[in-house]
Image (cartoon, rainbow over all chains, first blue to last red; front, side):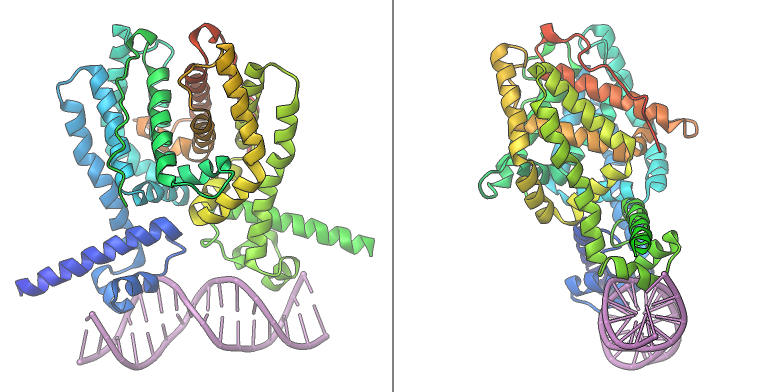
Length: 224
Length: 224
DNA sequence: CCTACCGATCGGTAGG
DNA sequence: CCTACCGATCGGTAGG
């Protein structure tokens, strides 16, 4: 019996993996459960045994996305480093997370486009306290003179997330504007995109005198 | 006969309008031609008389998106203002265009996610010369000492587009992170988002001594 | 611009 | 986890 349960859990896991991949590549409406079942190597009704409806599958896919931050944000924000380092490591964590698997960023953006009201509610309920804490740190940075006085903390944080998500999800599509030859190694493109992203954020957040290399690029862990 | 043609063109136009709206809200795969026909107030086969297939309709929707920049970019870039003003007015034009109708930004992002290879090719063919010109201006700005020496022109321009698209398309979804009460006027949210966007770009592009208010916010024309 | 109609595929169920 | 099957909807065509 425990054998069966373990086997079931493995199939469940594989269904979720293929769903993540296909939803991110083709969108929810562009992906039939038949297609997911084929990718896993099972029949459609078997998939529906694990996830009663297509909606349930979607919900679980996105739940997994949020779960990471619900557990990670508290850790990042309660570490006892200086404000400046804390903010820096926040951005690094963001970049690292989405860079490790670019399905995650595409999935996030698609969900914001497809179900804006639902994402609004989830984001508000789950992220609000942590994100407000970040803003308080930025405010403290202003008082310290580390952070520029004209920064709008809420809007700034929003743009940080937007830039990271955007760079990973569609960065190399937009960067094609500059290819005059054929497509070059998109990995190098993404790397310089992330480097410039960090420069932009660093420069626009901190007062000039604190502008040494707080945000060293660290893009070695590009994968998949 | 000319009466008929005029009537036909009006229906065609209305089909395109509803397609733009529905594709941007629900995505291509999430929008049936039946749904579009209903919105226009005609039958499905009538829609297919104007656009032989659903793909043709999609193509024309996105062609309209590109056409604007193919005609606008040359004008913006050949105006004889200073480099600094030129770059500033570029960003203003970007913001104004996408702010005027947020379907445009959602549509653009969706297409980048759904058909990355096709968008790559279109973007490379249509935008490459103009976007490279922008980079040359930034390079000149570096030599003048107006632009910061550590700017990566290509990556910077990519991020500019990403920030504008992202802010208009999903800005108020992300900004919900900060609502602790109910949803506040999302118009005000978007306004401060754009203002911070311009601050970030200005600060990270120009050398400090050229940092007066080149990019005055100008968000009064929010519509739809 | 319409009615009438098509095969294919959609998400999902019955029953084992 | 499977076979067999369901009604509904998909994009599209014939013909006027």
